[in-house]
Amino acid sequence: MLTTFVLLVVVLVTARNLLLREVDTRANADIAQEAAEFRTFAAEGVDPTTTQPFTSVERLLETYLLRQSPSDGEVMAGIVDGRQLGGVRGNPPPAVLGGPDLFTATTTAAKTSGVLTSPAGEMRWGRVDVDSGTGRGSFVVAAFTEVGRASVDRTMRTIAAVSLAGLVLSTGVAYLVAGRILLPVRTVRAVAAEIGETDLTARVPVEGRDDIAALAQTFNEMLDRLEHAYTTQRQFVDDAGHELRTPITVVRGHLELLPEDPEERRRTLALVDSELTRMGRLVSDLLMLAKAERPDFVVPRPVDVAQTMLDIESKVQPLGDRRWHLMEVAEGTAWIDAQRVTQAMLQLAANAVAHTADHTTVQLGSRFGGDDSARTLSLWISDQGPGVQPQDAPVIFDRFRRGRSPEPAADRRAGAGLGLAIVRAIADAHHGSAWVRSVPGDGATFGLDLPADPVAQGGREAADPNEHKG
Image (tube, rainbow, N blue to C red):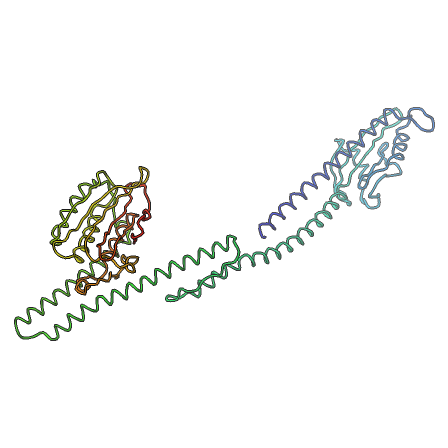
């Protein structure tokens, strides 16, 4: 509204200046017209009493002035031999002019037109001189612009009053409309002020389908993500504390009851060392998951997939006494971080060893999928273990989640539940996905689907109904 007010002031000032200039221009035009008419009359007019051309300058001027009807602010006078004739035609009358005889003074000027300042305001004048054998005379026409200027001022005051009233009305309407429009924004601000460090349940009511409603919806979605992240973080901290508390309790209890017998002392220290090793592995896994949030966690480069699979096959051999079979090898180049992918595959291999018996078969392989515009590299490991229960498959890649095994010994061998979470973190960092296909009692297949080209984004949807992605 302030901008509108400034614009109105500029428009009013500009319009006033243009109108005042028009007043001066119109006054000059009127003077020139009257002068031209007088010249025509002096050249062609006749004395109405004799029907003959005028023989006297005074008679010529008196006759012409009697026939004129000056407009408002216009004055005409006749000057003969330095004296003014008896009548001055026009408005304002001579009494208003006051002071010396302005019209007589114009006859002594070198120029035939000009501008004078009079008690009635600015006067623009023009003069036509007449010379005959019987005398000399002048016809003087003047236009007082004060009348036009006063009319312009009245017009501008009217426009200014109307504009000011319109501006006040517009300001009131704008205030009401802006308040109604910004009400949802104030609601968003109020909700944001109510949100605490531990309470992220507040939401903004969404009404309508305009941009403000879209803003409120986006704000609510942001709160959903924050609440999910906070809940996940709190659960992660609780689970990490629980997992670390157990080995600490075991170590402290055994050290407090450390026996004197050398053999029992050796077994106790071996147990303590095992628990400390497990704690160290847990801390390393937590650090690995923390690094997975960094943008440089993976550095994709063009990699020979066949050579990478041969390296993985050689590295899984020492993990356990299993029959390792490399079933298929994708041939070609893929944009992946070979070290991180190898780390994920070794984790899946260790997971297979932990849930299978000695001398059983564990298969692994890789293949390319998709089309030339969006190739996908799939790597997988399949075991002959007890498989994954249907209720565990959707969450098995979450942190501190372990698949439940029908064998109690297998549960005792299970880790902290971070291995598969690391696998998923590596897949996510490649813009891919980790998945599992399993039929309980008939083994499980874990794998990775990764974009093979640098321009590919996101993973592929699973076609197998038994496949679950993490």
